[in-house]
Image 1 (cartoon, one colour):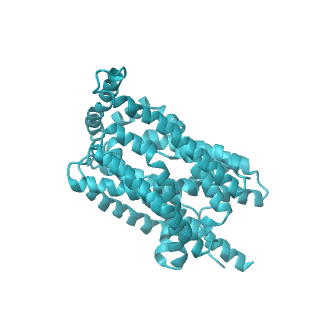
Image 2: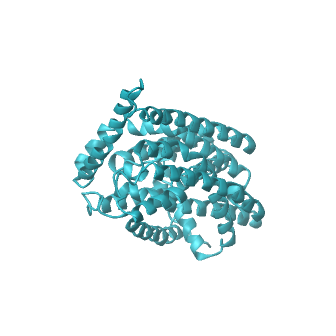
Image 3: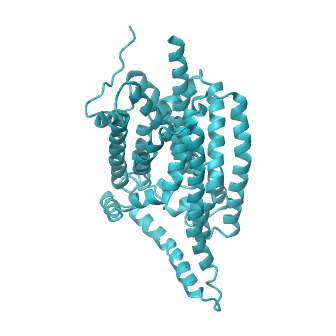
Length: 416
């Protein structure tokens, strides 16, 4: 029994540490969205791309981080869902009831996050897609992976068709003989309005809180539209996470050779495809329509392959250093990932928005990473001491208590 508990503990440490790396990695890209107008995340032409070093910072982020840590977080969400389902079934509880109550409260947290803190929320998306992913919980790993790849491919094709058609129409803007010339000019004019929208965002987020809240309330449909647009990316990632939990990949059950083989198969082609997409954007002068196509469609296959490769490499790293103090701290940050995710939004909006320090649009891309490192340090400093004393992070405890309809025990009971 003791050996079983030790094995289970090692499995959880691997999952928790992966989640810790993911929640920290998400900030490495989200910090641009906190600190600059929304389109700056997609294209340095929109904002924060005035110098070669700015463009280099954007390029490195796009190649190595953009979508990969969010993808890993989505994979781990699917794995955690199965972990909770398994525990519920083992204790004789109704897994469906527990799951859907958790998703309901997560959706409420997500909507509050969107309206009152930050427009870049992913919690409502996860709650919505998580309700669908639950239906696949009994599928075996191979079937989950096959369907996930099929759905992901369908999503890439549909997105490529939609945004690619815009690019095709826009290409006729300068050809007066084409029947699509006027439509192309109109489409170009719509995208040219981005520059004006950037100026509006600067004014809005450098100002007080109430106009920002009013703008969010006017955009109340955005979280629901986001679910529709991201469904065929997020659901396959969750399904992959469920499969990789079932087959032991995410819990460190594979051999080191298997993890290295996975990384070798996925990282080189994923990196190559991502480099090609980055080159296309640079060659176009970071044209907005090209950038949107790249962000929404072209980069997706490379992101998926690199995400799986990162997961394999991180599991190897965790397995080799699992007894080290720093892995223990990263695992603690992962156990408190919900608190760290929302806490990051509180800190970042307080630093950059006008009702806080008012640094929105005033910090360069490279300097943002110094702030990012500082927040990573805060995550690692508070998470472990807190979890040494308490069972859950503060928001994890609140979520669990609301989902179960009663206050859950918070303090750890000292070992006798």
